[in-house]
Image (cartoon, rainbow, N blue to C red; front, side):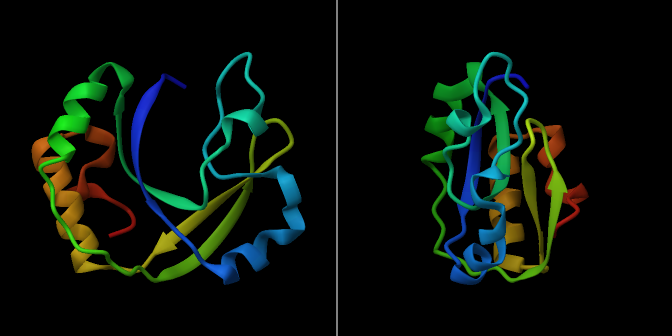
Length: 127
C-alpha cells in the first residue's frame, strides 16, 4: 500500500463498539498492507469511514485545499456492518452508509477541488 494522506469521518458509536467487542485487538480499522510494520502499531485510528485519499507527496497541497472547505457536522445512518477476514490474523470492519445528501454534497466539494478517481462521488457505492 503506498503512503497516502487520507480524509476520514470519525464514528463514535457505543453500539458499534459493543458489536465488535468479541474481536478484541484483532479488529483492523484501516486496511493493512505495509511491509515491515506491525498491523497493531499501524492501526491507530478510531472507527471511521474514508472520504478520500491522495498520494502522500500531495500532502501540503491537500491540506491547503481542504482548509477552504466549510461544512457543518453531519449525521450518517449505517445500514449494515460487514466483518471480513484481513491480513495478519485480523478482521476488517466495513460500513454500508445510507444515502445522505449532506454527505454527498461534501464529497462532491472535496472531489471538485481535489479529484481522485477511486473516490469519485459520481461512482460511489455508499451514496
